[in-house]
Length: 228
Image (spheres, rainbow, N blue to C red):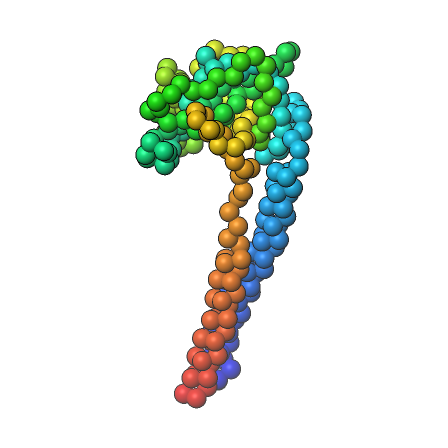
């Protein structure tokens, strides 16, 4: 009779325990995978940039030479930053880079404030831009609406931006420029390759902690049931 009282609760607790332990183990595996990804990004960031290919891997550190068309710039996103002039709203400056007999590459030259005392620094002639590859995006259900007429975009969709700028044969990725902070003028390029968040250790501790709590609670309940 006593064993029968423990049978179903014990079976349910066993299934829940297996589920919690499985989730914890999965997070440990994800932790090792994420550490490998972060190490790969760190090695790529420390190493030299490679020439850009026709279909470069996402977030590869590359370099490309061509002419920046500052006269065909567009804006992407909106971000508030602290500047020497105070807190300001700004955007990412997207500029096409023309190459001989190759697709045009949209270059994210960096952040620029909406209100600036000095003009944006313009590149003259052919330049070599170093940065990382960011894949083109597609607007989601809750994405902010782009304004092609004013060249203001909130989704980094290279085909849409290229069409608004009157460009054809645009590469399906954006080159995000890397570099030190500018001494006086904008744009302000990215400093590092993006790094995905790594919260898997805390998740694993949470799942394993819940598993331990389940075992303790079941033992206390079983002792109480056996002594009833």
